[in-house]
Amino acid sequence: MKKENNEKQKKDMSKILKKNSTSKTEKMKKGLLKVDENRNIIYSFLGGALLVALITVIIWPDRIATLEDGTQPVVTIEGKTFTADFLYEQMKDKFSISLLLDSIDNEILSKKYEENDEMKEEVQQTADEYISYYTQYGYTEETFLEQNGFASKEEFIDYLKIDYRRKLYYEDYLKSQVTDKDIEKYYNDEVFGDINTQHMLVEVNEDMSDEDAKAKAEEIIKKLNDGATWEEVKEEYKDDVTFEDLKYVAFNANYESEFIDALVKLKENSYTKEPVKTTYGYHIIYRLDQKEKASLEDLKDSIIEQLTDKMDEEDPNLYNKTMIKMREDAKIDFKDTVMKEKYEIYCDNLLK
Image 1 (cartoon, rainbow, N blue to C red):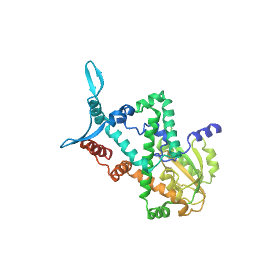
Image 2 (cartoon, helix red, strand yellow; image 1 turned 135 degrees about the vertical axis):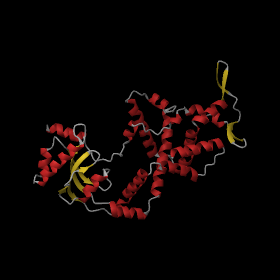
Image 3 (cartoon, rainbow, N blue to C red; image 1 turned 120 degrees about the vertical axis):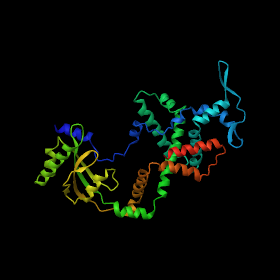
Image 4 (cartoon, rainbow, N blue to C red; image 1 turned 135 degrees about the horizontal axis):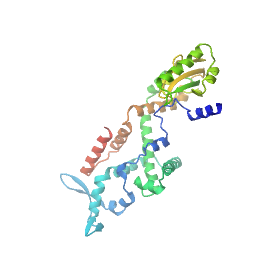
């Protein structure tokens, strides 16, 4: 029975992690790969002579970017000819904004963030992880790339480099919004010395209702109040609870706020007298000892990370707003009025 309980504990580890702490693999499972569905076209086919031939022609009152000579046939069928002009107009209608923004952002960001070994390694690893994940579900590398609009793995990696640079820019932008006053206030109000922590969890699941879980946690607390030791109670209820020795919990641990708030309020060598509710169930938290609070200088980078994470969580559109502002700061100037309108609609839709 003890062996089975240990296996259960391993399976249920980290039952206090924030629900929004999503790993890269979990994002893949949820289909959050940042490949715009409007990019489902093979870029290599659109490249080359067709786009090189593009020049700007002013047609009043609209300014429309056109091909110098768009009459060249691309394909014929049963006497009907599809010309370069036709292909270009179809591309503009369906894929233009995604294609254009990839090119614009790459032009802006490749100058700011030069490619280095860290970028190459990170992007290659990300590409491999995406492909490896989807191959578990019957995809080949080729079908994965094709269905996401990439002609080759190299093209996929090129796109990931753009995305990688966008994220670098976003991180730098967020950091630029954090002031020394913000950092000092967070240090004084939120930072604490690492706390040596253990806890028991009565999990709410299909076999244990919320009401029953709370009652079980209250029963455990009563045993402690009546004089049972933490170790005695842990042994007695080992088949009913998940036990974790969390070691020293830091101020920036990625745990649910209800758990951290209750932990910080405890005195040393004490436990919570009421069950602590999180999204997982009901906890009894035991605080042992605490380390001294580190200096602001030593914690500055960690505090900035906490503040930028908070900014990102509080405004779901902040990433999109930052990318739009980046292009405004770069003073992009649309010569094609139709494309300008499409971009404005694209921005409006992002910010809804």
